[in-house]
Image 1 (tube, rainbow, N blue to C red):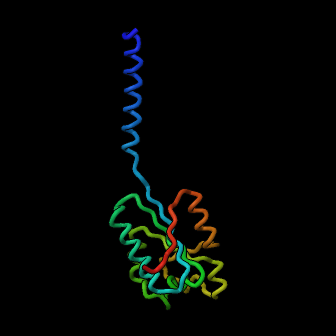
Image 2: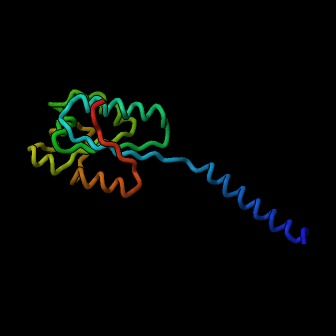
Image 3: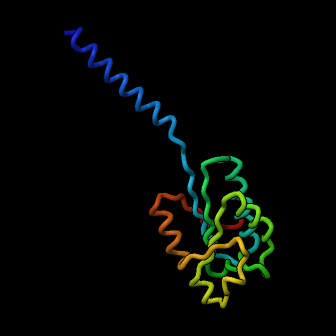
Length: 144
């Protein structure tokens, strides 16, 4: 009886080890959506700092999208933001900054008014919902 079980146990062990090795080789993709809705420039600064801190920990396999809507739109308006250089630098590193088109209409902001690195989405709230449904981690921007 023992001799019959050995091949079965051996095959089971090989399959288990094979599965474990494949799981170890899978890279973790960190996907984070940050919702920014305030006109408070200290929250804008905290958002930039937070992104940089995340990048220090997750040096690879990182996607971040900052969804800007409501009173926070000036964060992405070229004539009103204090963070154009930081946003440009982060964009070069793959960070996405998206302005809500609904908020843009409400505040009479045109695409041409935005930083050249900014994207637009039809609805900021819907963008956040879609990202969460796709498994992205959610952060609400605030001042620290």
